[in-house]
Every structure is written in structure tokens, then in C-alpha cells.
Image 1 (tube, rainbow, N blue to C red):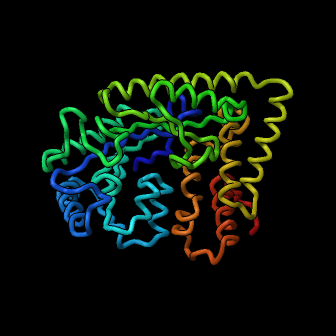
Image 2 (cartoon, rainbow, N blue to C red; image 1 turned 60 degrees about the vertical axis):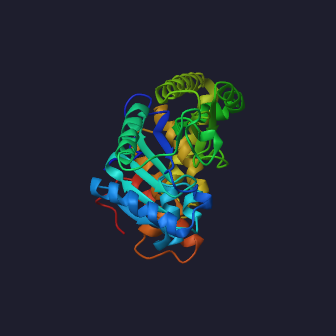
Image 3 (cartoon, one colour; image 1 turned 135 degrees about the vertical axis):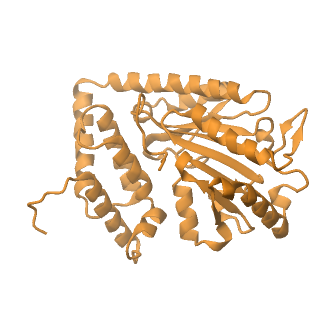
Length: 344
């Protein structure tokens, strides 16, 4: 099963995942903000008629728990706004190729592909293939002057948002992020936190994405983003290499302490995990941590999120402390090898 956190290949020390999202609206229906329940359900059924035979699984969000809805946010399949909607909306999921289609979010359709590593071209091809399949069955709202019509004017044109999630601890610690954000803004790109706009810089993870969709082709937008990401990777790696002497000794001590806490903590909050995650992930790239892989650590980033962790538990934790104990146990199990001689 393809998972966005299974990072490998060149630049795996910086790049976590790539995502392409295409917004489309169906002609003959008002935008989702003005769409009644009957219209929303009609769109969902029509979209399901196309996608379900193609291997997509339909999850009607009106029939799931808030906890499960939040877990889909934590796994980056849906937006927080989508999870919190009260009008009919559904997710169509095909995890093997990292595909997710949100029906009746801000736009009628948000077609998304998210893949591990620097995979923008492949993510675009996968999303475009789904868009083409839907285009054969529906008439998308389109203007010769403005391109594809979307609820938010900033998505007019291609309706495409592409992003790359990067791990930038050295630039963060060095105080370079404001300058990077200003530079990206000048060239039509933007930088956001782990869960998008307003989510902050948890774990030194950031999404760089295009800010403009009108007046460019999809290929031009992807090339501009890839160039900016490449430059950012080089800057991050250069700053990491510049850490030497006493600074490296103090950083090594911090990283090894964080590794120890992750492996042996009895109680571990999600906020503390993300901070420790950043230290240990940097330690892997610097060769300080040698017995943990990027894939294992990145998978824990999803598995330890509050809703996802609670859903995976054999017995639902009774309170926040019980959940934090469960998180610590999971992390310890994943990061420490089994000792056959250990007595329980």
C-alpha cells in the first residue's frame, strides 16, 4: 500500500512527500456554499458512479464519527474544513496510488494525489488521470477567460495546487524561515505548516506550494515549484553541513537525549512527540542516530496522532493521560528491538 510517509531515495533527509490537488465544479449546480442537501447528495452519487467502479472506496462523512473524521485529517486525506462540515460530503479513496477525492468541500470536487518523496510529476499524472475520467462524465464549470471556475478566486485558472512537504530543522534553528517565506512570496509561492494554512511549524515541517493558478499551465507551475524546492533543499543541507565543533557536540547531545526519551518514555504527549521527532529525524540525516529509519519515524508521525492512535487501540483510552501512555508504548515498541532474554 502506498503511503505518503514511506520516504526513500535522494533528498529523503529533507523531502517527506509531494501532493497535487485539482479543484473542479460541475456546471448546473451552485457552489458548495449555496448547495442544498439534495444537490450535494446528487453530486456524491454521480461521482460515486464513476469512481467506485474504478476501485475507489466511498466514505460518506455524514455517517462516521468525529474521531474517524479527524483521523482522515491526520492522515492528510481531507482538510479540517471538510471533516467539520455538517452538510452532505463524502471522500472517495484509492490508497494504493495515494488518491483521494473530496466531494462537496469548498468546491464540488477536490482531486488529490499524495506520494512519498519528491514525486510531483507522478502525483500530477495520477490526479490528472482521475480528473480526465470524471471529465468524460461531467461538464466542468469553465470560462475561456478565467479557466476552471472555483469557489475561491485564488484557484481560478488551472484549479491546481501543488505542494511539497519539507523537513527544515537547520533553516528553522538558524532563523532563516522568514527570509525564505518572503522570497517564496515574491515568486508566487507560499509556505505553510504541517496541516496547511495556520497550522504552524510543528516538527520543523513545512509545505511549499504555488499561490497562483491563473495565467500558467500545470507544467509551468510544477517546474516553478520544483526549482524552488530544489533551492530550499540545497540551503537546508548547506546549513546542516555548517554545524561543527561545539555546536555539533551540543546538537548531538540534544538528539541523543531525544532519542532516549522516545525509546523509554512512559508518558508522551503528541506535542512532545513532534518535537522529539524533529530532533531524531535530524539525527538520522547527520549519522548520529543509526538504528532508526526515516520510514519508521515518519509512520509514527501518523500513527501517534490523537484520533488515529485512539482508533487503533484495542480499548479506547479513558482520558488524555491514558492516551499519552498508549502513545509512549507504541513508540517504544516501534523504536526498540525485542530482547528475547528480557523478563516482563
